[in-house]
Image 1: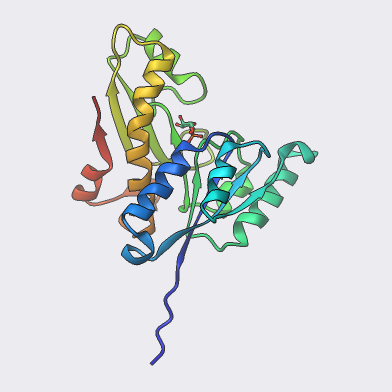
Image 2 (image 1 turned 90 degrees about the vertical axis):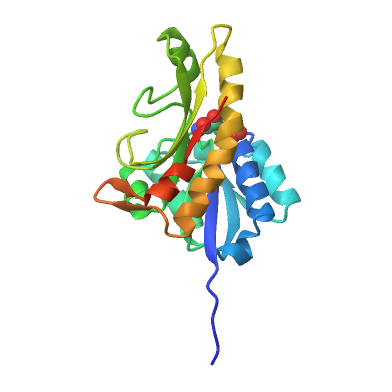
Length: 222
Ligand code: GRF
């Protein structure tokens, strides 16, 4: 009997430095995902040709693509090409890692249940931009990051995991962002692996997981 092992493909979308992509790559190697859960990072796609993360991908032998949003007349045309490139890898998981474009409803519904984003706030607090400054100005004692399924509502999809850090009186948006990023880099790989392994799933607009998995995807940082 011939056993066909189907590799699960992860496609990562970036726009910039790609530190979350790097964290996922590092973890996937340390934990040997190809063997442990049959998954590999198949490609990294950027909407900006100068995204630093592209170089990281190339150095690590991962396929890269640039779909430059400036080359398209409309959001729909850009998303259609982006979807074509992503779809060519038959992805099981599509990871937005610092991808700074708002995706059309068509793109989001095409990859529904497979599409993750990381947002630097404890959602549903502070959707949108400038989250660190807003958390400090609001006098929050905690801040953090959220991995969520992407839905039609900006930063509004079902929550998969959260990492929480304290906000200190001496914090600036920069120091707070830095503190949070350390834990993003723990959180995102865990969430991606959990989705690859089917330990979390999207059901009727909510993220379903058992208690043990849910605990693993809740990180309290310091
Ligand atoms: C992170 O802070 C993430 O929360 C937000 O964009 C930033 C991306 O950083 N979505 P990087 O490109 O992964 O380094």
